[in-house]
Length: 334
Image 1 (cartoon, one colour):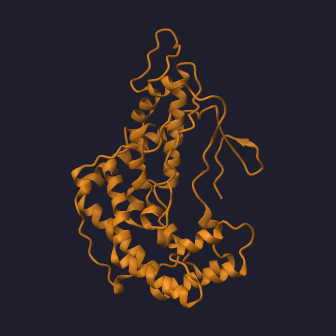
Image 2: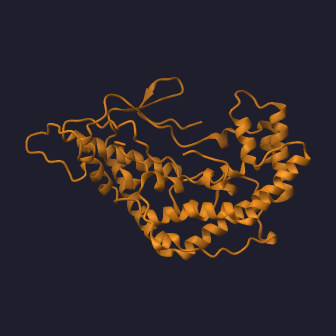
Image 3: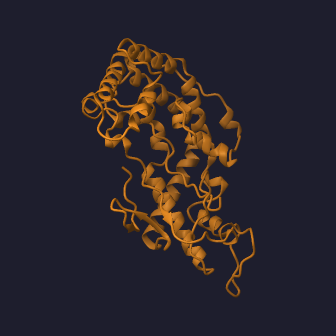
């Protein structure tokens, strides 16, 4: 899908250590695609009550860390994959009417996830890090891998209705906007951007919340007292997670200190509460925008299921399994 679908262009981020950078695919997608609404609601300030220590819940699992109002409001990784799958099937059905198989251009970048709410906190389970350090397979699992495509890209004229002229079957006429626009319409139309933009602003606001900064500094001070110098848990994750093989004794020691400091300073408990408070306040202050998104999501979800049940997959799309053999079904990313 093109611009307004936020990164899905058929013809067509740097992730930093701040909350906005780590969670901000929502924020950057609209900016990169040039599809922002810039509406009045998106610019209104949201009143956020302070988080008080007695109200904090102990966060000891990744599931707790990732649970938030926004995980209910926006699509999961699996839902986004199903949406992409349905879109590609519709594109194949459309391009086939004009004698072409669907093969996207190199700039095709479908959204794989909105955000990973557990990532900025790092590990929280002491028993797990004692054994695995920062190499817990469950925490490394991401969305299904992107598919591969065989053959030359479908002409842009077929995909988006513009570009170099192509020969069409006698009497055939391309839909307005090409097969891309037709497929988007069939799935419920363009994704409403106002709620998406508001969510991006929440990440920036939470990152600047004084309570967030104090919690991270308290964790960093605790780590320093244990002999480890990191500005955030994510910095430690990034240092060790990319190292191959079994976790070293050093990595395990750092990871254990990481989780112990989170526990003693209530860092993750505070961060989860701060972010959830900002999210809940934003949803409450902009009910119309999130209600519009919920209606669109419900309509699209119903249409995605119908497409997946009735429309064959693209014939040029494939994945490689663990043994390197071609398969038409996506293996889960490990």
